[in-house]
Length: 218
Length: 361
Image 1 (tube, chains in turn red, purple):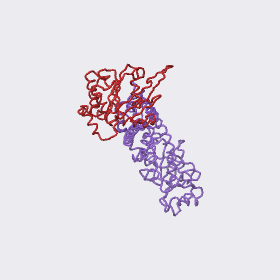
Image 2 (image 1 turned 90 degrees about the horizontal axis):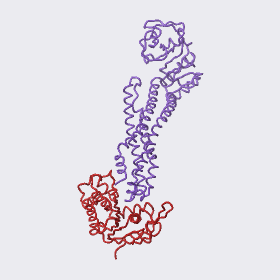
Image 3 (image 1 turned 120 degrees about the horizontal axis):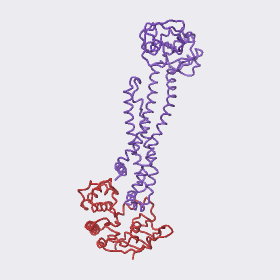
Image 4 (image 1 turned 30 degrees about the horizontal axis):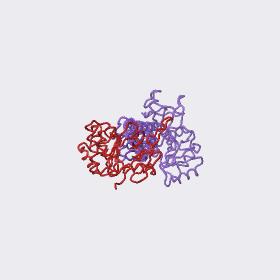
C-alpha cells in the first residue's frame, strides 16, 4: 500500500469579508499518496490557492485536520511549521518569486539545509541551466526562471511539491517544458506533486485531475 | 545560504538608498569624533604644557582656591615672608618664583609678568624688559626706549611677537617683585621626595599657602575639560541620533517594499527569527559601515587640521585626540543604536502573514 503524504480531513477555511462569511474551503477531504501527480482545476475563487496554502502549512484550517506524513500540522509551533516547510514542502509559484539580488545558484541554495552545493549542481544540470548558474533572475526568460524555482523547491528532497499555476505566466512551449520537467521528476524520482491550474494542457500531464468549485472538491 | 550574506546583498541591491542612509550616520560620527577629538586633544595638550611648566608642585596663596590656570590673573599673592620660607625648604629645589599682576602705566592697564625662567619666554636679554607688539603699535615704543612702571624706569630690550589681547610687559622676577610690594603669584618647584608628602609639609610649615601637585593640576584640567567635551559631545550626538532615526524610516520602507519577498522566504521555510535577524543585521551593517567610514573621515579631517594649525597647537598627537576608547565607543555605539533602530521594522517583517505577503504586488 502506498504511503499517504498529505491528508485533508473535513478541512474548512473561513474568511470574513465585510459582513459576508466566505468558505474558501468547505469540508475538503483529500488524500495524496506518495509518488502521485495530481492537478486541481476550477474557476478563480474556487479555493485552489487556499487549498495549496493550507496544504503547505502557510495557513491554518479554521476547522478540520491536516495530516502530513501522518503528523497533525496544527499542533506545530510557528517555528516548527517553518522548519517543517523547509524540509518537507517545495513551493513553485506562478510568478516564480526568485530573489533578484541573488544569482541562479544562490536562489536554488537559499532554503538549503546543506552548505554543500552538490545537490544544487545536480539540479542545475537537471533543469539544463548549468551554464547560467551565476546569472541573475532578471537575465533569464520566464521559462528558465520557473525551472530555477522548481530546482529551489527540490533542494531539500521534500515529500511534496505544491505548485500554484506553474504555467500561468508562460507561453505554450515553455508551459510544456515545465510540465515535462515536473512529469519527469514524478515518474523518475517519485516526487509527489500537487498543482493548481487553469490550463487544461498542464492538467493533462498529471495522473489525476480534481475539479474544485465553491471550496469543495467535486 | 546564510542570513548574513542575504542581508549584505539586500544592502547592495539599493546602493544609492543605502549610501544616503549611511550618510546620516557618517555625518553624525564625523561631528562627534572631530568635536570630542578636539576636546580630548586640548586636554592632553594642556596637561603636557602644565607638566612641562610647573615642576613637581606649585604653591599659591591659600585664598586662591586652586592651582593657577593659564591666562588668569591672580589677585591673592604670597607674602615676601612666605616666599622666603618656601625658598629655604630643604625638600624643594629648582625653585622658581612667578609674579603676574596688573599695573597702570600712563593710565593704561598692563599685565606685568615677572619670571625666573627667562629661557621659556625666549627673551632677548636679561637686563631690560620685553613688551608685546601691540604696545609698540599703540604707544610707539621701540627697542632702547624707556618704560616707567611705578617709579621704576626700565629699558625695553625686546619685542615679543606673541599675539596677545593684553598689553604684556615681561621682566626678570628680581625687577617685578619690588613693583608688587615683594609679593609673588606662585612658586613652582621640584621635590626631593614624594610630591604629595612635600605638598603637605609646605602647607603645614608655611602659613596661608596651598600647594598642588601635577596630578591636582591634571584633575582640575580634566574636570573642566570633561564638562566641555561632554557638552560638545552631547550636541554632536544629536546629529548621530538623527542619522540613526533615518535608519528606522529606511528599514520600514525596505521591509514594506520587500513584503512579497519576505513572504517567499517564509514560504520556503525561513523562521520568524531568521527574518528578524536578517533585518536587524541590515540595520546593524548600515550603522557599522557608516560609523567606520565616519571615523576614517574624521581622523583625516583632524590630521589636516593638525597640519594646517601645527604652529598654534604645538605637539598634540593624533592618538591623544582620537584615543582607542573613542573609536571603539563610536563604532560600537552607532552599531548598537542602528540595531535598536531596526527592531521595529524587523519585528514587523517577522510577523507578516505569509499568505497576505505572497499576494502583495
